[in-house]
Amino acid sequence: MTITFIDVGAHEGQTLEEVIKPQYGFDQIIAFEPMPRQFEILKSRFGGLPRVTLLNCGLSDHEGSMPIYGTNEHMEASIFKTKRDLVNPEFSTECYFREASSFIDSLDGTIIMKLNCEGAEVVILKNLVERGAIWRIANVMIDFDIRKIAGQEHREREVLESLHTIGFGRYSLCENVMHGATHQNRIANWLHAVKDLWVNG
Image (cartoon, rainbow, N blue to C red):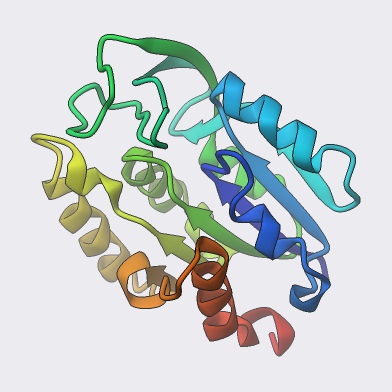
């Protein structure tokens, strides 16, 4: 059975540094990064590595282009212009997105997903729930950056309620599992907590 790790919001590869380690046993690693500058850095660091696929796009609830606001100088750029920590909300970059559920349904085997995408996590999760593709995921680690977006904070509660309604509990919340001195330590802590999901089925 194929074990796939999906990194949504790969930025410059901070998560990839950890998940490419052979100890995790991922057969393929797919990294989404829609911002051009960060994607070029990602390619320079991880391009050509076996098992690693780098995609210069994001995930959303539809396929097509839309703006991402902010310069991303501090990993803050978002599809939401009202995100409180944007360096320059008037600056935007047109980026390409694929529909999350269609992409997930195109994969075989076990899927582990990291969602750290500055508010887009609620759009992605809603799409996965509505299309039923959420059930393809063995565990998803959710960083609810929607908390930083004025007027959108309620969407975290709505997503969690929708997961509860359908009985899907295979998710890890960032604040519960991302513990450690470095980002790599935090990713390792999460993955060790859920590793039985793909080691023992």
